Length: 290
Ligand SMILES: O=C(O)CCCC[C@@H]1SC[C@@H]2NC(=O)N[C@@H]21
Image (cartoon, rainbow, N blue to C red):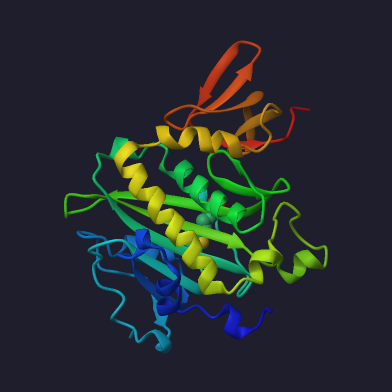
């Protein structure tokens, strides 16, 4: 089944499906906005006046102003449509209406900021494990892309900010491709994007509740222990483990080696002819130097 009832997001239905770990998360559903990440960042304590424009859905009893106040606790914002989605490294995040999940979760941490090293990877683990538990096996591409058959199923953008309430906040954005955009199905455009029709058939609120429940548990654990507790789980999910990969910086190959997992702070380990190196930034690719 994949009709409107199945895909209409509803805050109360999401909350009803959540585990206790997610019970204190405020949930906002909007029909359309520019970027759910930008919306939440603009509402952190001490942030400049909110700029996100949202058309709230009447069914959740929200009005256009009621969901734009300052945040005081964990908040999920999920949009049916995003018109200015953003991705890592300043790239745009494009998603066809109805074909994807686009949501952000604002979460306050005890801090300090350095303790959030590895957070994007821990988020990747939580999302990949949720998807796998729902019957879709996936892998992780460093730092945190969720891959299915080597193509991108979900992207994660974590933006952190030190707020005037003395806490460090992370706004964790996730875009998940559920159905292929029409042009991809017609064989036009990018072929490096994966979809998960199996997940698309799931009742959408139940899918969000499953993701939110596991994320909430993972974020609480991360706040207590940092990334070390996630490293082994990340390594078990690594795509192309032991295979030759390249590290790209602005599209140029800057390092090559065999993918060897991550260390306890989330750096990518590469086995090179000169020994093992730890990579801090860049994009992983299967591209080889010509
Ligand atoms: O792979 C990436 O580059 C990260 C993509 C993150 C996209 C999501 S969609 C929901 C949230 N809002 C945004 O503007 N971006 C994130």
